[in-house]
Image 1 (cartoon, one colour):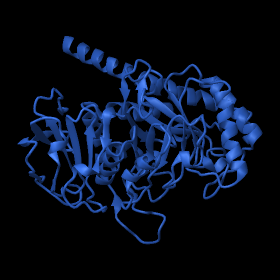
Image 2 (image 1 turned 90 degrees about the vertical axis):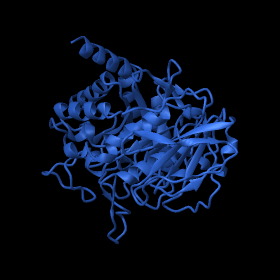
Image 3 (image 1 turned 180 degrees about the vertical axis):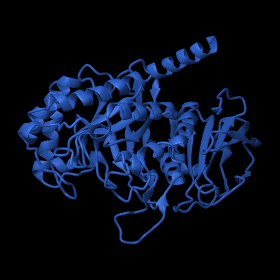
Image 4 (image 1 turned 45 degrees about the vertical axis):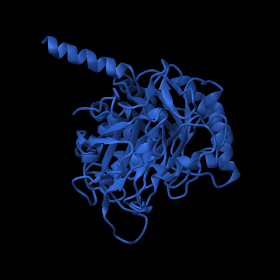
Length: 449
């Protein structure tokens, strides 16, 4: 019984460390808690969470993701899938007469519940006020209900309602890039409305595929930059962070969804993206210099169930899809980086001394500021050599970290004057590995699972 109580206490402490309000780190490139503890954004995509799930289902979803190591949930108030005119699980629509100045209290009580429950579980909520089709319809259902005047009021109303919650990150946009001047005006008016009330919560913008928020909004309110690398096996997630000129944290806010068709928007039938895609997307993002990564699953974002119209050929119920391999492997990604000085690491491709074409096997490497740790990621198990002389030590200890299990094993001890070939024990699609190189006297401990 004492052991059970101790475990519960430890879990509560762990959750509690993430329930604080977030801020920008001292160097401007990462996130931290109010107390200055580095915060690794490990997000999940749950766009239809508020719109489609009842409270029992909300509890199940949030509890599962918290137990899997996620600490940020991305969701939206005015949802994509006819979120204005199709009621939520309790028969409530978000707005009265589809007027952004008239919030339906009964609907927003459910929004309140989601945020409160997330806070109890130590989860941040990256909260989108609206999906983008409500100001730029494009391929969505809409209807367009925003103009600059009511967008500002809507922002004020939300900011007043959620000012007291520490676990909110505001995210404007909603899979859209403004195309007309009025679109820019609406977004900036909503940001102005929020900021007129709320200066304590961080704010970001969720753009459409292959886009970076700061290329459209280099505004003071954009605290966290965000890009969407998109749902393609050809995506080079490592390219985005280097394109950002301003000193902001940047997040890959929407990447290759697990269980979605590769490049689904094209007529050609291709493979389904899987857990390997989710891992590659994540490790490429983080090793290139992002402050975090958001995993996604096609079945989960839409909370697909057998009695609902499937979007993008969803095929697995959201409840079962919560346990897909990629989702369970994200905790290994997060744990590895948190065991090392990851916020002091920077991408350095000159570490790789073998040919490294930019294809699906492209190897990415990063080195710590103190030159005592190197991480090198090989997405398909391709062998490579590293310039070990860049480590400030005479000898290094090397390990293979398995991103499918979170387990590691020795890859040997070498002098930094040596030039060994590092080759994992398997290769091909799904055989990705991370080589960890440490000063032989390092006190860093790799995670154990």
